[in-house]
Length: 639
Image (cartoon, rainbow, N blue to C red; front, side, top):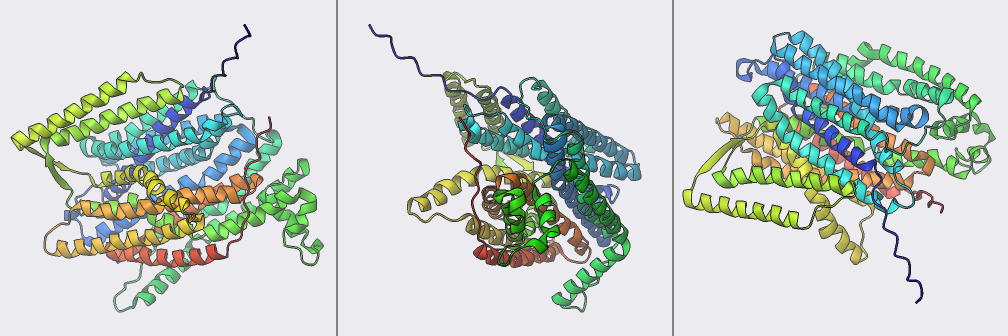
């Protein structure tokens, strides 16, 4: 008898470090979104020292709302500014593991400071509470921003040729755990704030961040660690010069934070809309120029110092990144031959792909420059949309037992989903009988709840917190992405009419404007109802959330994929950094315009952003129609 054929090799499972990375991400996202869910509401209350709005003048409440909007968005600007520094620190000097671990400790410290600040404010020490709040937010911005670029890259580092087929699956798990953490923290933290105050509400996300750090530390012996390049003195010079080059962004955030609230917006009475906005913008820019010029003068000097450090770095070991190729092209522009492009002079020195990098990045950045307006609108679901919800009727009456089952069933389903996910990425499975029994019991419980309500007719009344309405975003993201794939993208692809990425994004830009137009119309209706002593129900906000979340999926998911494929391999991290800076500038724009809330109604404030978004969408469409790019994919793995 001939020897039987060898059994096929067992398919490789997830690398052993993946469960620790996924668990860390879920806990970290819970901590971040939980804290952010109550941030605007808490700041608005802190600035009036927790006095009820009914006891304050309209000018006082408008000023508090304006300042809360500005600070919340400057915090988010900081969160998305620091990833570029975190990436350079990890890739060039310390490595991803050390950066994630040490920056996580800064993150934990930030949450602890927020909890202490909340306690101080509750004790009546409002000055100490406000200073502590700013310090805590700064630490969290450094922590969350520093981690952001390292975690997803660390995931990719864990895979080799034998497990590369699982990369897309693990990022699906990542996507699920992010929205999982965001949804539940956005529901839970506002309830904690209402029941136990700021100290507990900020403290619980801090505990989750500590858990996230501990989970990551537990995986220390199981991670594949890619050493930083170049490391040592050269790597330190890279980090130092990057920090100095980054100083104008920090100067902008600090200038708007320190001086923006001191600007007195002009009274719109007697002025046309065009006159008011031109007067506002020219006056505000003049105010910042006079009051904040020294910030930018200092940052200019720091850039010069950064160039000197970069020159020292190049003398030690030549780099071929974006800055190196750009500076070389500037210094050697006289060597260009007739008909050559600006960066062609660098081809002989750095090679074709490196020389193609800066122009490819700049082409993408020009097209994507309008995306910052989208982020200016989108991130307001954590600020002005919360304020809108606060002014609405948030009471919902539902059948008693069906309502109880909905809460218990959601928690039970989530616990099962989280458990299944962690076992899946640990290469373990749940016995097939378990889900049949588990979900069978849930169905029986649901039917029993329906039966009890049908016979007893009891109801329960729930008053939603204004901050909890934000949970609609992660919930809808998990619904809209598969819906677009199944109902729109795949049918069109089968007909040979696939929608190109830039067209998807253009549609998303116009949808963002539609979402804010809906918010503005709803707010105008609310203002008319308030004059008659009535309130509009919060469920009307669902429409603007559906449209804005669809816009997010069309822009954010598509944009990241497009940018990644259009940038040469050596420039992929650079373009991701520029993408995140777009989020930063969008949030700075909101903070810049926040003083308008002192003299405009919220509906008028929404119309301002609707108009800006329409203009940005038109410009984006024009730029996209003229874009000519080239697709760069990572080289195939060598076997």
